[in-house]
Image 1 (cartoon, rainbow, N blue to C red):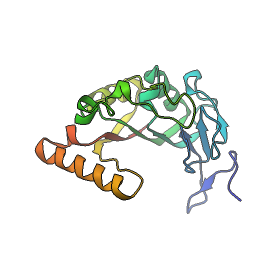
Image 2 (cartoon, rainbow, N blue to C red):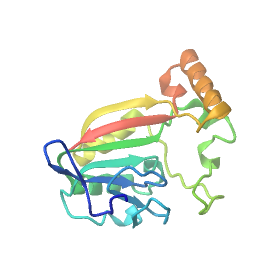
Image 3 (cartoon, rainbow, N blue to C red):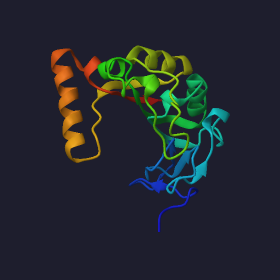
Image 4 (cartoon, rainbow, N blue to C red):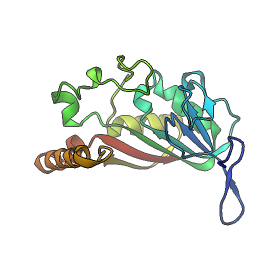
Length: 192
């Protein structure tokens, strides 16, 4: 059986490590998998627009994949993440890259026309912003985070032809221009 939301991991020295996965969706990563939707792997249903319902300095690591662009007030989320993260704790954040060429050219990929979800509000675009490296650095530093890395990241389809097609499109755009417009995501690691 898997761990419940109050169990945590121990490292090789026996030190307990608590990991929060915000907007976990279908991911099984993390001790507490928090999402607004009651999905199978979610063990805490909560809207982070209302804060993070845990005490100060509680988590060693926070994972925040593909949620930042869905937050109405991203600075409030970062303030809350900073609050619940232990000193020297790390946060990994993955978000959409504002420079990605296809967000600006293809009708299906245009950000304001892109709809997704897990069966809830499928026809509603739930994005509020796109970010550049500089935007993210400003957000992180304003809250007090130390920026360890912000890198462009290629995102692929699940499998088969879609995966190959996405790989090729992103590689071609990168070769013609650069990774700033060729890669769809920004992969960030910050620490407290």
